[in-house]
Length: 288
Length: 139
Length: 89
Image (tube, rainbow over all chains, first blue to last red; front, top):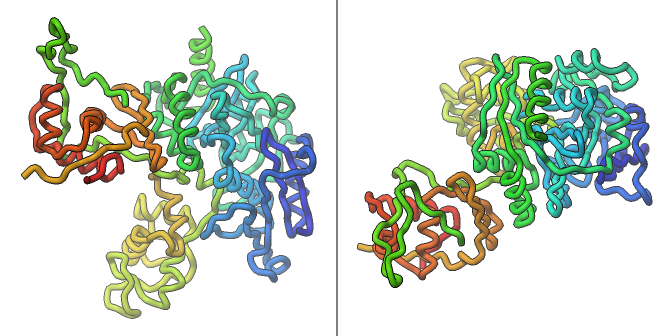
């Protein structure tokens, strides 16, 4: 491909190729502090291609291709090329990752132990994780939790945090402007802005940790806390994992062990400050 | 296989010299309508929003101009009461709103919305738009 | 009529994890994972003694457990068959 960028994120090396320069320039700025893959070898390739050959110039339309693709995926406008690159990386992980059990979860670390937050998209776990990452925790990832099936540890995968709509303002108030990519309007998901993880998260991208607490956070009118039955947790985690079924016995053993050993709570929160407060309170309780 | 110890109702008492226990544990067979075996299915739904910006053509390109009956099946063009093919594919978000809340997609006729919804619900693997539909609906 | 004879002959290839009164079951031959509630584990264990039709299965279960509503056993066996955990001889 005409343009190329290689990035190492946690244990995964990506090669992103693009027919256009602009998306890779934006991606390169966001991941400027990240290492290049050792030996220049990539685990996954993403390619941003014109939907049709003439769409490279005429109303440019970016199709997300790579080692793994999804049929029915609609192309994006070139102005959203950075989003296309990020979605492409997500897609490779979702369909191709075999070394780790993937959980659709945000993970943060404190005192060597890991908090896993999982649930429906839009529940605010990315924002929560990003906030915690600026308030004494280390952000390990906001989209994918990587469970090491041999050790039971969560490994970091600190991608740029994808903030949507209201969450953008929340984080803009929290960190400096140099931490953000461009604001993308009118994407299929509304307004999006990417925030790069801080230096602590990037420096720690090789350091995993054992999980200590599992939370299912959800926006609700009032603060509420509920226990969750273990069989239900197991089921919800399988539905939050794109590769559980393909990992067979190893995936079963690892997920069963996670559910058996890690306590879980469902929390409703009316605003992010309440959520952060709840998290800190449970963490102190857990550590005691 | 490790069996469970059954439900509440006392444990088994071993009789003397290995006789059969005098009390059996309670077992609940469950209601006929209940489900006691749930199988884990492959999942893409929760991450779909982050991996795919998808569309569903209504109907798919193989339909060749056919119209859509109220129950979502394909019928001859111009059939009375049937909805015409949509000029543009529906985006994932529009499909979600249509299926969950009955929201008519922009630029389409409200009286046809139900037909389009039922067409989408009847999509099978291999048909255009199926992956998109599967990613939008949990389980 | 006793109906078909059921077999659960790859019970030794089941990995079971009890959780809160339910059980997680991984079935090696198919790679499928199931979450099962009583009486599914008890039925599978009873079939370990060898193939059985519904009548024989009920006899084995009545020897160990106290219950009524025998006819529901057919629904339970149907579920296990659909999940691939038992099959017909």
